[in-house]
Amino acid sequence: MLKRLVEGAGFEIHFSLTGGVLRAQIEGLHDSFEISLAYWKEISEERRRCGAQRLLVIENLVEDGRPDELLELFENLVGLGFEGCKVAFVDNGNEERSMHEYVAILAREHGILAAVFSEESAATIWLRHGEE
Image (cartoon, rainbow, N blue to C red; front, side):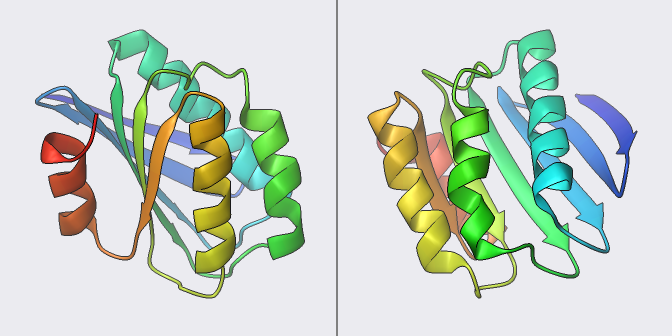
C-alpha cells in the first residue's frame, strides 16, 4: 500500500493506494477556487504517478468555497488527465451537493465517470462494484 502526504497552500492531501483505488483525503480550513484547483492538480499528478484509474476524493475542508466557482473550476480540470477514470467525490458538507452533482454530469460528458457521495463507504462500493 502506497501512502504519501502532500502539503499545499491552505490544504494537505493524504494519499493512499489500495487495490487499484487512489484515495485522496483533502484537509484544510478554507476552500477557494485556487485551493481546489491546486489540490486537483496534485491529485492528477499522483494519479499519473501511480497509474490508478479509480479515484476516491474526500474533501474535508471546514469552510466551503463559492458555488458559483465550481463551473469555472471544472473547466480548468478538463484536460488534467482524468479522462477514462472513475472518480467518486465525497463532500461531508451538503451545501453544494446539487452543484457537485451537476459537475459530475459534465464530467461524464468529457469521458470521466464521476459520482458524488455524502459518505465514503457508499463511494467505495460504487468504485469497486458500480457501473463501468
